[in-house]
Image (tube, rainbow, N blue to C red):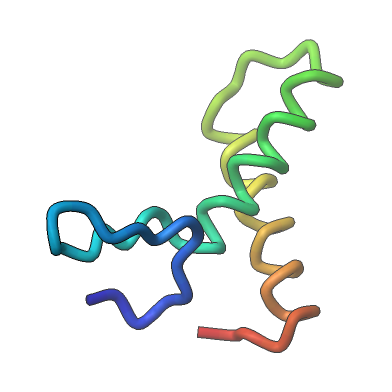
Length: 65
Protein backbone atom coordinates (compact mmCIF):
# COMPACT_ATOMS: atom_id res chain seq x y z
CA UNK A 1 0.00 0.00 0.00
CA UNK A 2 1.24 3.46 -0.82
CA UNK A 3 2.23 5.86 1.95
CA UNK A 4 0.60 8.71 0.00
CA UNK A 5 -3.05 9.57 0.42
CA UNK A 6 -5.05 8.03 -2.40
CA UNK A 7 -7.83 9.54 -4.48
CA UNK A 8 -10.79 7.35 -5.39
CA UNK A 9 -9.91 4.10 -3.59
CA UNK A 10 -12.46 1.35 -4.15
CA UNK A 11 -13.01 -2.19 -2.92
CA UNK A 12 -13.80 -4.57 -5.79
CA UNK A 13 -14.08 -8.35 -5.52
CA UNK A 14 -12.84 -8.09 -1.93
CA UNK A 15 -9.61 -6.30 -2.87
CA UNK A 16 -8.66 -2.70 -2.23
CA UNK A 17 -7.72 -0.86 -5.40
CA UNK A 18 -5.96 2.26 -4.20
CA UNK A 19 -6.67 4.54 -7.12
CA UNK A 20 -4.20 7.31 -7.86
CA UNK A 21 -2.36 9.49 -5.38
CA UNK A 22 -3.90 12.81 -4.46
CA UNK A 23 -0.74 14.50 -5.76
CA UNK A 24 -1.15 12.79 -9.16
CA UNK A 25 -4.81 13.79 -9.23
CA UNK A 26 -3.93 17.42 -8.50
CA UNK A 27 -1.20 17.34 -11.16
CA UNK A 28 -3.60 15.91 -13.75
CA UNK A 29 -6.13 18.67 -13.04
CA UNK A 30 -3.42 21.34 -13.19
CA UNK A 31 -2.09 19.89 -16.46
CA UNK A 32 -5.58 19.91 -17.95
CA UNK A 33 -5.94 23.60 -17.13
CA UNK A 34 -2.45 24.43 -18.39
CA UNK A 35 -3.00 22.63 -21.68
CA UNK A 36 -6.34 24.35 -22.24
CA UNK A 37 -4.65 27.77 -22.03
CA UNK A 38 -1.31 27.01 -23.66
CA UNK A 39 -0.12 26.92 -27.23
CA UNK A 40 2.95 24.95 -26.15
CA UNK A 41 3.27 21.30 -27.02
CA UNK A 42 6.25 20.72 -24.72
CA UNK A 43 4.85 17.98 -22.49
CA UNK A 44 7.92 17.83 -20.25
CA UNK A 45 7.73 21.51 -19.34
CA UNK A 46 3.97 21.44 -18.81
CA UNK A 47 4.28 18.28 -16.68
CA UNK A 48 6.92 19.90 -14.46
CA UNK A 49 4.74 22.96 -13.98
CA UNK A 50 1.69 20.80 -13.22
CA UNK A 51 3.59 18.82 -10.57
CA UNK A 52 4.94 22.05 -9.08
CA UNK A 53 1.37 23.27 -8.72
CA UNK A 54 0.32 19.92 -7.25
CA UNK A 55 3.20 20.04 -4.75
CA UNK A 56 2.12 23.50 -3.60
CA UNK A 57 -1.46 22.27 -3.26
CA UNK A 58 -0.24 19.41 -1.05
CA UNK A 59 1.66 21.87 1.16
CA UNK A 60 -1.44 24.04 1.56
CA UNK A 61 -3.44 21.04 2.71
CA UNK A 62 -0.66 20.10 5.16
CA UNK A 63 0.58 16.98 3.38
CA UNK A 64 4.29 17.23 2.58
CA UNK A 65 5.07 13.52 1.97
